[in-house]
Image (cartoon, rainbow, N blue to C red; front, side, top):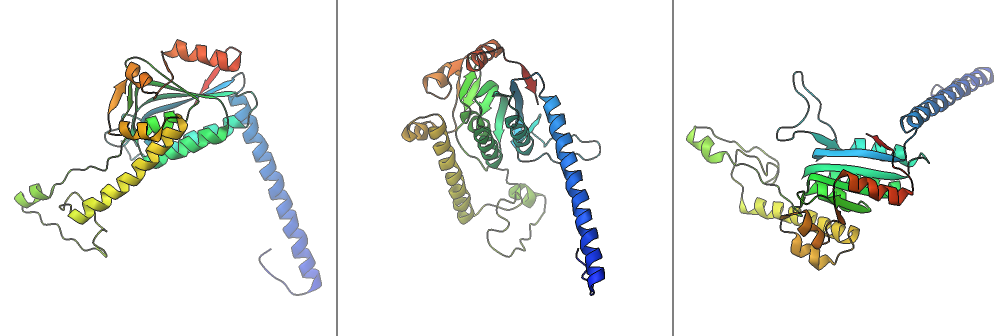
Length: 280
């Protein structure tokens, strides 16, 4: 339809063929959508709960795996990808047989943005949800957990770490000893801020601390809202500390102590039915 021919006959042919193509495309899109939905329907067949693993470092996307590498960043034993979790929650919310969400959380944290995206998707799904904290539910992982209707953790679970970090290693002194010189060729004084091969200036530190404070305020407000806690109480807890299960329960950071059987019993109460979980 992009080519414009002069003449009624040719224009008529163009329009006819053009709309014919559009019609074929519409049909193909419709068939594709039906096939995808039918596949989703099959994948959730027989389930009333969707189970989602939130393990390892929480990130917005999965890094590409190089040849011989797993694609898991250094320092992470696994990754939980927000865009994948969002997709699962969107699919699950479209199927009437899925009536609850179970998040299996074992993570020491990750990117704040990824946590925000998962939190929003969980809210948008509009389903009762349980965050089951296993080994760790810290930092960005606790941000995610706070969005669940109920949080269950064991007495030995590590919970909290409400705080923000942008710490890194400065190699500039070692470089000087090794005779290595860092040449800063940047368009602005903050452009290479955080480069490990140069010392951090006082202005750069202030800028990073300002950003951390903004994110921390968002974290505190989110936890206070999601957990129905006074914001002053959450501010007092927001020093990066973690707590084991019993203390986290007394602080209002979780709702119950227990392990998988406790989670299943809670789901039975919510569903008034036996929970059948499809894991993603």
